[in-house]
Length: 379
Image 1 (cartoon, rainbow, N blue to C red):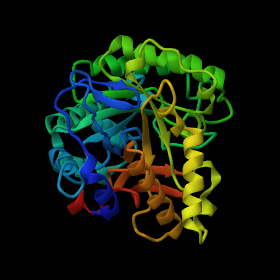
Image 2 (image 1 turned 120 degrees about the horizontal axis):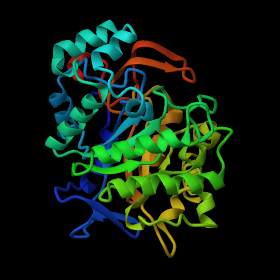
Image 3 (image 1 turned 90 degrees about the vertical axis):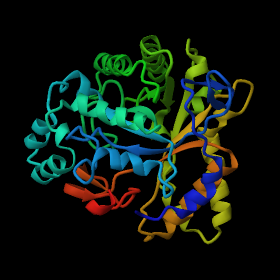
Image 4 (image 1 turned 45 degrees about the vertical axis):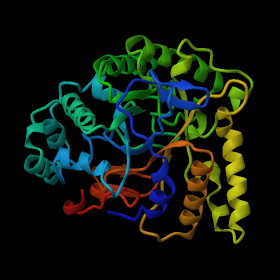
């Protein structure tokens, strides 16, 4: 397991678990719907939205073991941000796990799944997705179902076709259909505490007017199908911009279920080079204030709304001073302002990865940002 001591020292004291769901919001806080007591989300991202459309890591260890590690003394997560692609439900729902892996010639992955989780191979990809959600619930892990993309693929770039309504792979009607299907499917499963409208909207088609239109539609569809879940809505610019809310609120019929989501990496807003400065405190303060200006402000004011920082993380091999400066800063912000968060990412490897930005393309690719190690013994 990669090194997470700094995070655990900061956050262990403030993680709360809940067996009393559903959740709602009260001002800037996520709370137990019945008692109105605070419930803090300490989450990790578990991808299931890439081309194989299967939760990563099932070729390395049994599902029950992988889930058990989430709540172990070494990790202390109480929540998973579990990602999915629209097409998994609208186009490929009848595809089996075995067929999916075979179609990509992922022989090693298939052999690994056959060894550790053979009962999954004959399932459809939707049934396998359900099986992971069910196991998370059985082990008292809360689940956020995150609509990461439409076409299964690595996320994200401006021109990947998955960025915003109007892109080649982002048809509004199909996207809303997928949200409805997922909301209906997981209705009544108390471990599913939230469904996101869409991850990291971006690209040349993004605009504020359509954001209001489609986020409201998406949230209403989720709420009508499954009124108990929270609705997560991220802004524009890769979930880095909610400034338009300063001028106009999102008028909804699900206000006590609405949570805004933001992401913060070292390269967010193109400021990666600033983290190398000798005056780290000033750089951290400047970046933090900018984050608050762009997104974090939603927890303040007359009508505060909770914010969930759904993606943070760094290369855990400790090779970059830039990354370490950024990470120390973001952890400080999350602790100081008592923010709910999700770390990227849980698995240590991917069945198949095609990330042209980082130039990581291939089969069985290691994820240096993963909590788990690449080796079978640690995943």
